[in-house]
Length: 388
Figure 1 (tube, rainbow, N blue to C red):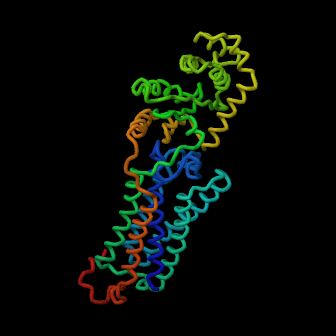
Figure 2: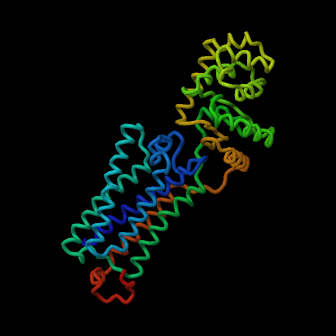
């Protein structure tokens, strides 16, 4: 029992490291969700402004570095002052974790399970670090762990696996099926690209020729469906979306070319019909269509679908069952190749939990089963590592 607080501290930090690593993979993943679906709370947290420190560095990357460093300190801490330093670093981390949980509940309105795992582990680490520091202050020997190679090796191995295993699993995710509304757009024998767009969005405009390049490359193996999601900050986006929806299916791509290239002064309720007429349509017919309840209802359905799918930004693209976030034509092409190539190796998430759980448990058991005479370095211990 004398080793319990140190073991709990290290285990809490290992969980925080592993969950942070999983989030780093997820944040760097512009396509298939490795650990979180697009409708999950993780996706909502990731797309929120709180996901980056000062809008720059992603929080998971900072957390991974911080918890790995803190774990390293627990491996070398032997003196009461060293344990106090660990506690002085862990406690602010625990308080920040409480703040992050509050943000998820009150500001973001969604909980990310991986974020919660990191935050709860940080809080546990804060409490146990204080426990260790207080015990060490009274008796340094009461919190010493054996420095024998098996003990040290088991903890170092567990930490390395906590970092590396999520990256391996993230490389071979189990791709979930597309949402029902996206599946409904699929055409047998083809890969269907469902692209949510805004005709004034700069990144959507850059994605437009990239999607055309994909279509030219794959020809009859791909189908493109555009869904309208005019953003509130773009006044011309809604008239442009209505004009696009009024175009017949065989005219929609020429109309899209015109709308993406148009200036803001042309994307008005009066200007869009004249603009669309350049594709061979009647300006009067388009103007009347843009005002019709059926067209307005069609636009609202697209907007609701975007919200139901958890969309947080544009471009937002489905390539078959795979998701591509933002302007990333390279990822669109990779997703096309993956969809055309069929299923590949996929590692189920439970397997990652088994591997990490066994590694963490082994480290704890090796430590707890070490003879008491070796815990304080006083017993026979020929394999003990040199003191740090």
